[in-house]
Length: 416
Image (cartoon, rainbow, N blue to C red; front, side, top):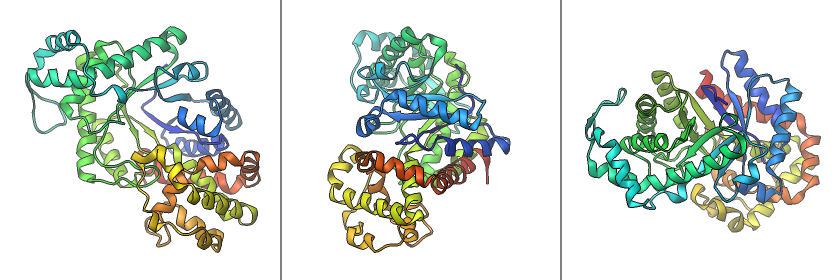
């Protein structure tokens, strides 16, 4: 299977918004830009909600049929490891191999030495088209990079071979994810990580590196925008060179695990993609759940009452709900409105506080982050929550589709 130039990670917590998400991609295609949808849902999300990987395949297939979508689409086993990959084997045809836990753990000395010997020809000055400064490479540097990353790549290869044995090499797309590490990879590190991926025979079509700054869930990028722009462009340049040097798949591209809504960096991403004629895989599905809550609030009546109930329960359980996401949220508890205050809000006030519009005085980034991790509360409501989604499908679908198209697709892939 071959992943096209542009792709986007979609899907949703409760499997109800596939048609609305595809509507955004259909709109993009009408404007001349083809973007491949990749439904994704992590093992953690399945565990929280009580769903199974096969449910995502069923949701995707149903949405594709309903929308008469005839282009390719994929179902991602998102952030899987050797311990849970088999759960996704039957239903997925895209596998995000998460090997961050192996980064920084030293590989066997023999493996490190062999890697250094194979690639010592790059010692000296390395010119990367698209990077202004020449990269200086030493043998000690190659050894240090191998010590830090080689075991992680070896683990990715182990997972890849396991999937290949079950599904066949041509029947799935492979992504290597190294974004959940403690610091960004330098251009030299990225170059030799890709060398290792090639050495271990992993036909990666996307790679997710770590960038500087914070990629908190559901809110804008928190960091130096200029620094991010430089890192992103450098990674594109290194990938382009590595594809030629190491005979990696020619469609290899960056995957940005954005946590959604990184509006302040979208412009620099689009500019760099145009400059390098590069593709992109953007994972940005998480805020679909928030658009459901926005829609319930705007619907008023029972929908608004449910949105308020979700917030009140989330506020009471904020430590529990936030704990699994501690590294990707920053919630100031003092900035959270009381449940009594929220109970007096009308639907527009609730929606304004939740919807990501930094120009709106009512927008509350802390309120939004708490609700982002509160989907467990809705899951515990069971059929009552799902029935509310069905009863308010029209307004929710409008929010979901416009959020994905206007705020993400138009900004990065289409151009405003």
